[in-house]
Image 1 (cartoon, rainbow, N blue to C red):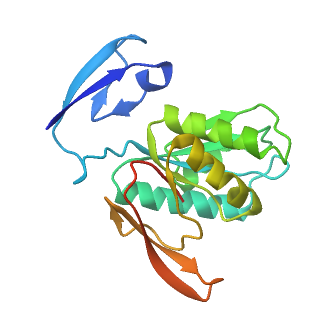
Image 2: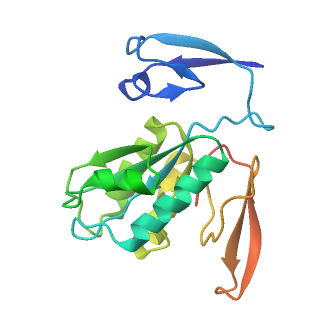
Length: 196
């Protein structure tokens, strides 16, 4: 059993954290809670965040595949799946719920397609505000370039080229490609936060 201190932010007031509905609390109020159940290493997994990438405002098949993967991971870890979209989206973002998103956060600022610093900063900030211990990115050029930056900004570990749902959550144990895709290995993360 451990005591947890939370300062309520606008993002936290309307979500469920640790099985408590916080809608009756004020922003800025301190909340002390006793956490009885936690992961074996003490880490608390609050949400899984996935970047729902779009191309010219349209979601492609790969976005729905990574969202389904993130939903499966969140379900296995008994937590929620939060999708993040960036830029002007011409598709209906509500379609993301059909693929497992429990919540969709849309950032409508326009980023230059090559602005990896801006994209990674925005993703890391939203992931932190959602209390994410796990951030999932597609194995696209964008995902490959912003993944390490997001990990650094979140002080998280980084595992690339994952091919399966994590088999363990504490420590995180996931199968990934290695040796240019000719072999597989099991990668492990003991960090509180991980980007895959």
